[in-house]
Length: 62
Image 1 (cartoon, rainbow, N blue to C red):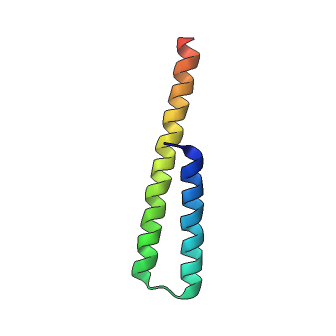
Image 2 (cartoon, one colour; image 1 turned 180 degrees about the horizontal axis):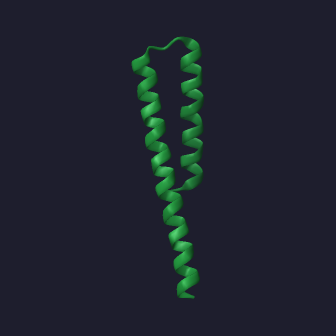
């Protein structure tokens, strides 16, 4: 997973959530956006963890 693309995707969803709240979207629509935001954040954590484990493996194995 590409960390930069996930970060951009999360920023986009966050802006969409803020705009939706200001525009008066229903709570269900906001909940769906928030859920997608949480999934994206989880994927970002997994991607960062994988990258760190890869770097640690290079350091320990090298």
